[in-house]
Each structure stands twice: as structure tokens, then as C-alpha cells.
Amino acid sequence: MKIRPGQPAPEAKKTPVKIRINGQWHEFEPGRDIEPAMTLSYLLRERLGYTGLKVACDEGACGACTVIMDGKAVLSCMKLAVEAHGHEILTIEGLSADDPLIRAFAGQCEPGYGTAMQCGFCTPGFVMAAKALLSETPEPTLGEIKEGLSGNICRCGCYAGIARAVQRASREPEPEGGKP
Ligand code: FES
Ligand code: FES
Figure 1 (spheres, rainbow, N blue to C red):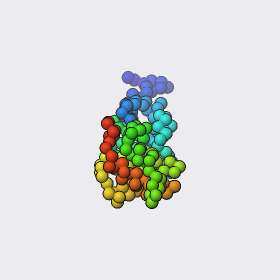
Figure 2 (tube, protein in one colour; figure 1 turned 120 degrees about the horizontal axis):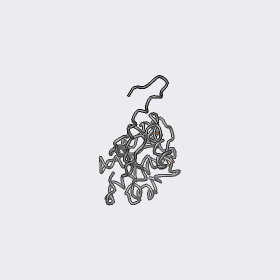
Figure 3 (tube, rainbow, N blue to C red; figure 1 turned 45 degrees about the horizontal axis):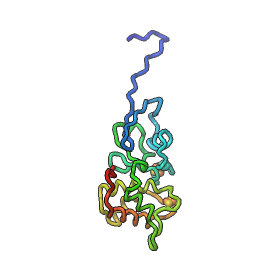
Figure 4 (cartoon, helix red, strand yellow; figure 1 turned 135 degrees about the horizontal axis):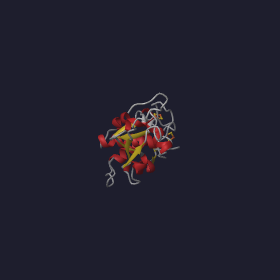
């Protein structure tokens, strides 16, 4: 089609961005729902209301925004939303209340280890990082747990309780359909 001088160019056809989140496909129209520079954490929290993940440092240094993408833990503040096109994202809202990790974090409080959460701000990030760890290494050693969660920071200092909760969860069976 010829464009005459002064005539606005026709809009390029916009291919929707499709992301599967917690088992459901979502479609986003570029320019309307999603911008090229939008982070995955922004899309999930601010546009879709998955507020379990937290944005603390917003520069890949704390792990609070961890979600699972195609089975691997990723920092959602360091991913562009468009990079998730065609991929599967699991947020903490997608875990069953029965998930061994959820129960282990909620139940962990033991002399010598302490609680797995105080303020709870870091907890969703730790749970999702631990979920990815356990799906790759179902019975990790303490060293593997420390290594696997080394990208996550807990400012309340609950590290011993968190490691204990992950160890405990690793010994429990997954609920039906609970794997990402
Ligand atoms: S908010 Fe993403 S790593 Fe800190
Ligand atoms: S429980 Fe408060 S930051 Fe981890």
C-alpha cells in the first residue's frame, strides 16, 4: 500500500505476548498491556496482582522477587516481561497450601534453629528458590541448600530456620499435582 505525504503510516501488526502463569495462559498486547522495558516483576505484581513476590533491591541482589520459569528459579526484577513470551511462570500463589515447603516454613520454629520467618518479606523468594532446588535435587545436603539459596537475603537473619525448613520439606511427599 502506498503512503501519501502527510498520511499516517499504518500501525505495524502487534504480535501478542503470551505467558503461562500458574497454569493459565495470558495474552498481552504490546504498547497497551506490556512495554519493551517492563520487567517481569512489574508485570506480575503491578499488572496482575501477584504480590507474593517482593521487589526489594530491584537489581538482582536479594532474591525477594524469585519466581520459577520453566522449572528454574529466576529473578523477576532482572527479566523483561517480553522475555517470558512462550514460557511457563510459577509464582508462590501457584503453590498449593499443602505444599511441603509452605507447611515447613509455616511450621519451622525449633530451639537451635529458630523460625524460618519473622517479618516474612523474604519468604516467598526463599520458598520459590527452594522449590526449584528441590525439583532438581530432591534430598539436598545442608551444603547444597546453602548453595542453592545463596542468592536470597533474609534481613531478619532466619537462615538456620530456613535451611531446616527446606531439609524438612525435602523429606515429605509432594501433594498431588504440586510439582511446577
Ligand atoms: S528485587 Fe529482584 S533480586 Fe532483589
Ligand atoms: S523474615 Fe524478615 S527478611 Fe527474612
